[in-house]
Image (cartoon, rainbow, N blue to C red; front, top):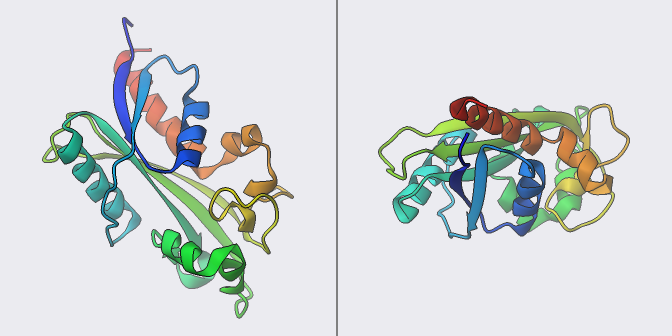
Length: 193
């Protein structure tokens, strides 16, 4: 392979950018560049939201783009708040997310990450989706408060919340890591690696 494919990762979230950059470090197929573009907050299913964000990013930048959308889904609430977690977190904080399940016996849920990729920069072209899930439990907030809902999500099989884990541990098991692995595999296969 002669070179890496340059793709613009569109996000204004510095913590997401840090995680993605750390997980792609050493990847031989992808050269990630970053742009913070204020994209509209779409409504719909997680897949719909991801596709629309990606199309809008491609329309604005006119280059190959990746966008990422993250959901926190409560099984007792049939997957809600899902793609609307950003707004729930903003209004309720981590403590409120945990309290949302106070009336339910089922405290399980899953974190879902979807990377949406437009290869051409043309918003009319297809968008590819790469999705990863991480099962877990919604718990009382524990750990650092520097990255969204991490303090209330304890992955299945672990005693720590995402917020209590080292970055390396979280990045090896998270929903984002699983989705990004699928994306990286796509680029590796596309490059013949």
